[in-house]
Image (cartoon, rainbow, N blue to C red; front, side, top):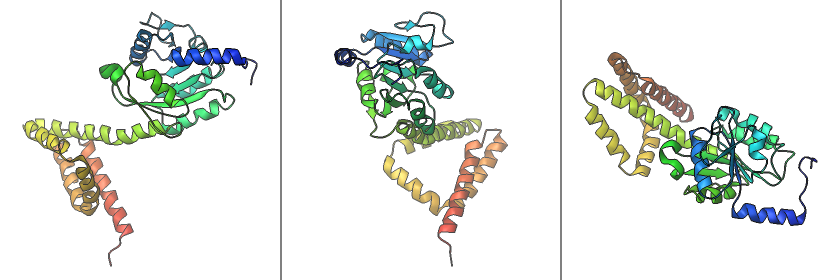
Length: 286
């Protein structure tokens, strides 16, 4: 271990472990709206909270704002990184040499699973640091600390215990670093695509005076037997791919005539064409 991270004596380690377990100090990197929400809540729950953000100059409720990243993390038992995804690795590289012995380093960014796994390289010389990957599963600005989280990695349980104190439900995934974000991105494939398709359909409905009708159609699908609907989509999309592709090509052309964005309709047509071609290759006729 580097001399900058001295091994604590057994007495010091025991004292610190007991203190951290009871009321861990928290460092927050990234003091945007999400960082401020968690910072204020953790302070109200009795935690000592420090924070750093190069773009924040003024005071932040409940957070001791430091002038450097090192100042925010050097005394923290748990560090929460709440920056943009693109800063994930840079922040880790800047923080690694300043973290205290046995700290938990928690990446809450929306960086890809591979990028989160890549943090293992950054911390290769700090085996004392416990890492966690956290995926935020909702809009924190709206839901505040009630926003559900998912955590994976060695420090996942520690994160869950910390956040439970501010009313946050954390689903701990039995997996490696990056697995929490992998779950979120799988969910995003559906949620964001479905939301985009809904916006496209309702916008088109509004353009021709059928908004109430299309809203009702969408609501009926959402209120039915979810698992049965999934099975119907999985099987029907393959069996009827050719016919449905033609239908979605016609839908895309219709939206173009209406002057409405047809991105999702055309994407569906492309997807159905791929399903049809793949099925034809896998199950050739004759």
